[in-house]
Length: 229
Image (cartoon, rainbow, N blue to C red; front, side, top):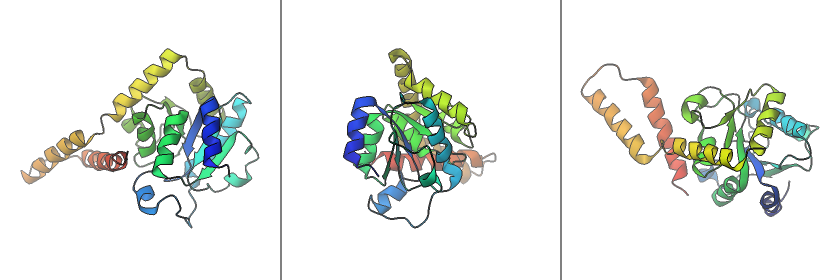
C-alpha cells in the first residue's frame, strides 16, 4: 500500500483519478475515524475489478488510479494491479478532501447505490465525475457526470480516456455543471422541502410522495457529510 504522501506527490505531477473502494465518506467515516479496521469487506457491487481493468486498457499515459477505503473483495489478486494503481486504505476527513481536490477526476463505478454521496462531494469540490447510470444516480447527479456502462470494461476505459483528454473549456463546463448540481443539495433547500412535506402530512393532504421523502432524507445525509468541510 503506497503512503499517502507519495500518492499526493504523484497527483501533483499528473492529476490522479480517484475512487472510493467502500463507504469511506459520510457518517461511517465520521464515526470510525481513519484508523478503524473493518472486519467486513465491501461488496463486489463496488465494481472495482472492472474499473482497474479499464484503467489498464487506457495505457501507460493514464493518470494514476487512487483507491481509498477498505479493500475490495478479489481486487488484491487482480492481474492488472500495478504501479499506476495506488491503494491507500482508510484516510482521514482532511486527507479525503485533499484526494478529491488533487484529482483530475472522480470515478464512481458502483453497480447499485441508494443515493450517491461521494460523487456529490467530488462535484462540490470542483472535480469532474464519471459514474454508472444505476439506481438513484441519474436522478441525483443529473447531466453533470460522464456516464458509462459499469458492466462494459471498454466503455469504462472510453470514459476514462474522455475525461483525461478534456480541453480546458470542456473541463471548466463540466466542473461548473457539477458544482451547480451539488448546490441543489443544501441545508436551506432540504429544510424547505422537509417543511413542505411535513406541512402536507399535518394538514392530512393526500399525494405525499415516498420518493420526495426519500430525496429529503438523502439531502440531509449529504449535507451532514459536507458540513465537516
